Length: 284
Length: 252
Image (cartoon, rainbow over all chains, first blue to last red; front, top):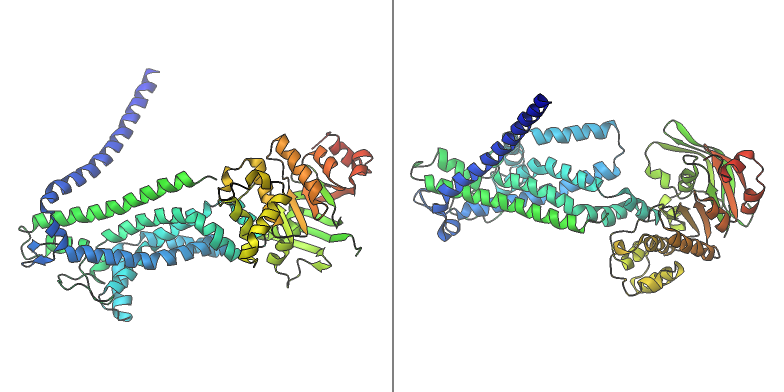
């Protein structure tokens, strides 16, 4: 009896320790970044371009570039992903081909992001001649987050009760209208929550944009989707590895990291708010 | 076909994959009659009901043999659009399933998408809700969510929703099994009223209900139509021993 109790205590202890380590690691990272980066943050830092070979000034072009690339990735990934999920859950005859397709999509989710970057370089930048541009970068990031969006959308579509579909179809409403008017609106909050998490990832990725969109340094703001942009993750990479004076730019590096983390956490926060709002309104 | 027949089944077999759910069913349904389908769970009565408006099409791997004639046309003929069939043959389900929309939009949804003019919708919504005897209870809350209604009200809303499409036939799949006795009584009164204008085919597990509301009763057992006759006859002097055993509660 006593030994059994002791075993239980040991096991609980281990589980607790694991949870604690994870929390501490996350908290530690965020604290470390905030502590070192907060000093660099100022109004000028987020509204001015870099100066003096990127050792002074702000990071405004990089913030703007990241916003452009992320919005572009959403514009490409979301419609494509939702459409794919609608096909997979609503229209496709469930069978071997669909199972194979789903395995393919899951594999796509596991492909390293640098591979996406190389694909973007080969296909969008060189073959389609889009050059290193917002367009190439957005397309690459859009494909990167596609599996996440498809997965989230599939789950959300499946969670819409079958009885809604039956009710609509039994009225003599066509399948497409049922999907568009009943299934999709009820799945949309779920689709968006899942997708926003993917979008957070798109904002933070370095490798896919390194070859396809990101400029080392430019003070010129982009005039069209065919222009290169600076981006926060790549800017950090540049400052930390290839800048003109790596030691002198440490505060700027931390400041940039802090801004990036804030942007990504901000997007995650939106996801959490949307989700709780959705759960409150969900009544079936 | 006789003039008072609206649906005629000829040697209908139905399969889920390899397993046969209905065996050689031949029967006719009378126009403006209430026909009750009874039998123990899994006897195929719900399957038969869902065959009549092609709702079984939604299930992968099902197969129909034989003919189901609606107004002399086989509804399973290749040139028939199931969407058109469902407009003429409406359905009410076991569990009330209103859309998460307002009461008004629940009713207006179908007509709006099938070409009823926006100007005619108000009148149609009112008429449908009056037909399902729900109007007085909801006329002031038409813009509130249908999810706030009670189960019985929701089911009458679903009936109104089906009626708004002006169908010829109303299929009801155990429409009161999820409701309390008072709501059930209201639905039964409603069926009594509706049969003046509609053909109603109802699946029920409730023997008293079948006896109370139907003109004809069909008893099914493991995919076979065992006995089909006037309700009065089935419930007083059934021809088959199995029917009697089921009705009197000896099995099922």
